[in-house]
Structure formats: C-alpha cells, structure tokens
Amino acid sequence: TTMNYDLNTYVAVTLAPNSPFLGAPSSLSTVHPALTHVGQVGQLHDVQLVSVPKEDWSNIGDDILASLKGSEGVSSVSIQELKQRTKRGGDEL
Image (cartoon, rainbow, N blue to C red; front, top):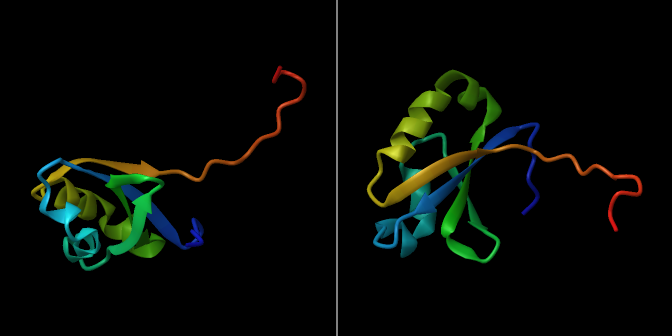
C-alpha cells in the first residue's frame, strides 16, 4: 500500500487483546464514515492503520478520534506523521 500523506491523515489504532476488531480489522472502517482501513502495521496484528481524507480530518478529526477511542476493544490511537528520512553525516559508527 502506498501511503499519500498529502491527501490523507493516517491513524494507528492499537487493539486490546479481547478486541472484537482483531477477528475483522477491516471493520474499523465502520466506526466512522470518513475512515478507510489501510491494513496492519508491520507484523503487529494488534496495530491497525486507518486513513482519513485530509479535508475530513481538518473538519471533524476530533470527532473521528473520539469515535475510535470510544470503540470497544480499542486501547489507544495515535496520529501518524510522515517522517522525512534525513541523512546524517559521519555520526553513525
């Protein structure tokens, strides 16, 4: 999956061990109409990534976060920032 940070805001959702979403992570998209389920983060099946169009995020981001945080089986939510890869000169030994 190619992630487009210009168009979307990405949110990592950490699921509790007893979360109903573990069996069907794509159902996270049903928590709020603006959400799209992107997939799991790396090998972590209990961390799922969802995306929200930037336009929706700027208007109703707080509502979306509240909906996610209030969902059964969601233990934490964190907004993902695009990390620029920086090359360091000479300090990696």
